[in-house]
Amino acid sequence: MNRPELPATAIQVLQRMMSLLDVLASSPDPVSLKKLSEQTGLHPSTAHRILNDLALGRYVDRPETGSYRLGMRLLELGNLVKARLDVREAALGPMRELHQLTHQPVNLSMRQGDEIVYIERSYSERSGMQVVRAVGGHAPLHLTSVGKLFLAQDDPQRVRAYAERTGLAGHTRNSITELGALEQELERVRQDGHSRDDEELEPGVRCIAAGIYDDQPKLVAGLSISAPADRLEAGWMTPLIETARQISASLGYRG
Image (cartoon, rainbow, N blue to C red; front, side, top):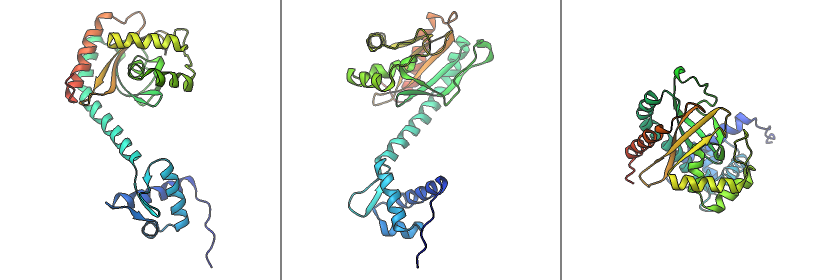
């Protein structure tokens, strides 16, 4: 007589999920539910339930009934990780040189959904500015100079959808919280080819940003300088743009 399965803890579910993905990764061809159950030691009903959840997230595909293979979502995530590693490696040296010139924090950021995520930073205590968001921190697109670069790449419909999803919540009295104002700001970014944050994310902090492009060519990251509002120099824009171009060139950009 088979004993009923006990409820799995979250860790157990993750372990079972990874064991299924490992079996799929080891086979160039779709794998049947029966074989997955045998190789992972999972009951067929348990394996089927987990695979259904993975399929909903596009982590696995079902090319035909009863068989599974790795899904495109894993490829997307892998490419995202690879891009971050490539950009970071290419940017480290130029970022340090730009920091030595400005003595202010130099940030490398990428888009992740409706936010930017900081993936690298060059700074020192000499800047006189406390770094609020550490590497790995997130911030809304419309409140940051790098985020505006990415929003400026979107068509009007996508910008409106972003505004509806986020509500354009503000953090300071300078924050852009109206769609019309955001659209005007993004048009300026398109015309200038670079962007600014005028104390819109953090009071007392201003930023300027330039885009980093790959060989597609596609905007993959943004390079920014952050400084106390009264210390940000307009003359830093030129070396910032030149540094971003240098990093882009190392990624194969020929624009």
